[in-house]
Image: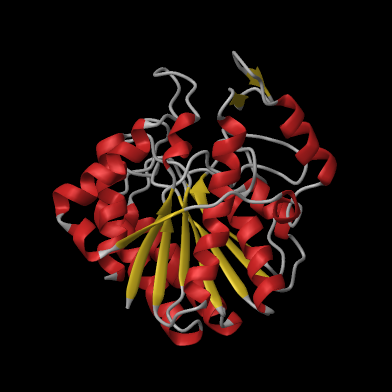
Length: 304
């Protein structure tokens, strides 16, 4: 059994100021909690490398990639959509975030019973094929899933997204890809205001405002687990957003650390059955710093 964290100090150079919710303090909080919990001594750390244009193009239009590169400012900030701004270190951080997810795939695919967590910023699951959105520039999880399929000839990859916001970008990129099963839970109705249409490879679990972890666990158990078992993923991937926590005021769900430990344990069972224990998780949301750190620790403890 091996658990590794992929990150890079430059992910914290993407900094839009202390008033912006997606800020460097998020990663500081995770690493502080890892140290204070004692868990840091049970896991290893690896430095991420940057994704290439070719790797980004696994999930994004080349014209969009050029657009993001050209927009990266030398000073000040520019806005790619109403929520997503760039400053002079943003492109570097975004490339490293996507690269970390690819590094994590390589790590787990070369080992048995290995789990990797990418402590990265900016997040990725709102980024569409040709559009930045919701603090996201490149869709880290979708890029890494496409990479795993291409590079390791995988036939079945599960992406499970438990962020409080639906991974609309991931849905758009992987829709109708028979190699990927995408399961997304989210507060509904809420940003990014998704419809509830499902397809053969897109499963959705909308949760009403105020729902606690009991509703989430019930939905996963009754709606997803049998379908995931039938899919028999060869790799388990996770868009790990922690903004459904009751301390996080960016949304209105009421989860606790035990709920993240529960889903981590279920994911480990899934991985053990058909994926040789291999899991790759990428940080998405989570803006209440202490709750974020504690919830990541709960997830990693479940894997250990």
